Length: 165
Image (cartoon, rainbow, N blue to C red; front, side, top):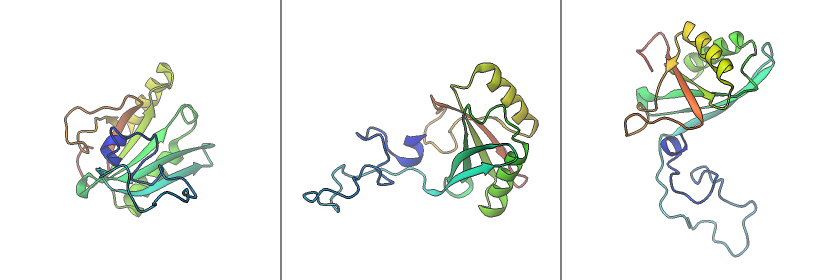
């Protein structure tokens, strides 16, 4: 996902060069802060917003971002093991409404942590399928076919105004 959205493939730092995470704060006196010592950074899809959502009724929180170009713009929300098993109905409805009404997006992708125990992940995915989510790859956003994440299972759904994610 990092490569598709930030263009950071093959970079020496673990942070994002695009977001300036490689910079020290404050910078050292002998470093020219305007010199990009990593060379030309290839950027991926533009990140429009970062989100942290607190679901008080479900007693959990999750993070996400909005990225993509044109009709491929999408809200990605990350669900880890701390979220699975909670009552997510209200939070998920709010997330979909946020995507459609605030960001005018037609696609929502839930990124499920692959380290979640298999039984919990299957039950969660079954619940998401009831509201229109299905397993997707990153084909829509990547320039290659059948791109998957080693860390996240992607479940996508489209809003009422467009086709499948």
